[in-house]
Amino acid sequence: MEQTSNNSLNHIAIIMDGNGRWAKNKGLNRTAGHEEGAKVVREITTYCAKIGIKYLTLYAFSTENWARPKLEIEYLMKLLDKYLKNELKTLMENSIRFKAIGDLSKFSKALQKTIKDVEEKTADNKNLTQVLALNYGSKDEIIRAIKKLTEKNLEINEKNFEACLDTAEIGNVDLLIRTSGEIRLSNYLLWQNAYAEMFFTSTLWPDFNSKELENIIEEFYNRQRRFGGV
Ligand code: FPP
Image (cartoon, rainbow, N blue to C red; front, top):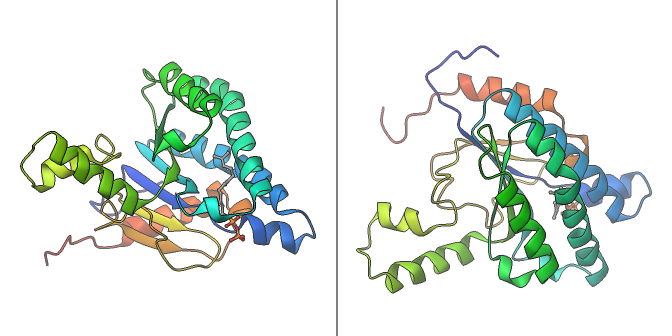
């Protein structure tokens, strides 16, 4: 892809929305939408690795998603566990590192172990880092960061605060995408999106693909990022 500006693109964050509507439109159970959505996660992750993106952060389960029906939550937990176990091979083949952000303590011990195993096994991979936001909420992350700052008795400044966020080594978002036509951040990376270029597409997540991502990236390079300057 031709880069036509000085915009650097290291970190893409995506709010993967619309699985339920995709399934409903097809007369299927909502869970079928999540299953299809997981396939798109694989396609988009390998594509980002191929084009040299450094970080891809995907909103997979929010602190607010616990309000969903119990059966749907159980299904999402199982899908996540299955996805991580199945994905290890693809992650290793493409030298993709896996990392989770969010408060993982609310998950079952078994799921926490799967997450930790995949993080450890992929820790030395050098290509893209795929970050899954799991039981993640930006407000929760900010409160946890403030607690860490206070515990460590650190001076309150931007650098120390960022070092206490879950995204300490990941940094700010360059490009934020939300699928399904909703135009809001839904408690996602509020601090890190301060200067992100934002793209909202009506495509439902299970219909999203690398071609559409390529078009969005092309538009990203055509935007002028001034970061408050002129
Ligand atoms: C939003 O669609 C999607 C989620 C809350 C979960 C995201 C999960 C996946 C993409 C699949 C599993 C992911 C991994 C990493 C295995 P929605 O259910 O809110 O859709 P709706 O707004 O149309 O109801």
